Amino acid sequence: MDIQLKRGMLDACVLAAIKNEDSYGYKIIKDLKPYVVLSESTLYTILKRLEAARMLTVRTAEHDGRLRKYYHITEAGLRRIEEFKEEFKEVISIYQFVTKEDVHHE
Image (cartoon, rainbow, N blue to C red; front, side, top):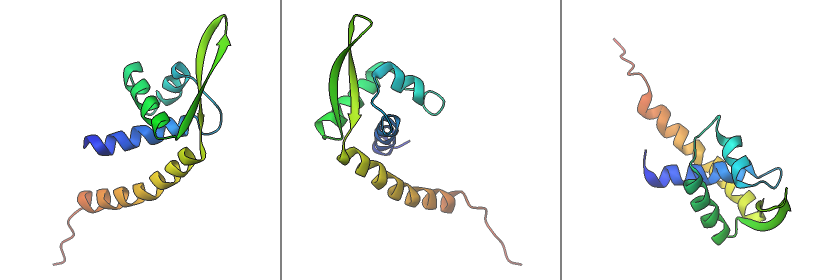
């Protein structure tokens, strides 16, 4: 798969994982597992990229005596999810064209 296409998809997946509630790294990985397998290093690279793009914010809170980073989606992150959905319609259309059966009229 094209690396840029995959990168955009993974960014959208991570944003979708925190769309309805703040979350933390391990839970994001667990929530995505039925759909895509992400390593911790890949996830944290994505989270840093999304934070730099202001699509999410980070806060630190204590949990069971340890500090945990919680990620919160921003308006820019919500817009990115909507943009992704629109863009993906075109990807689906292209996929359908490429994989369609040849129809021969005899």
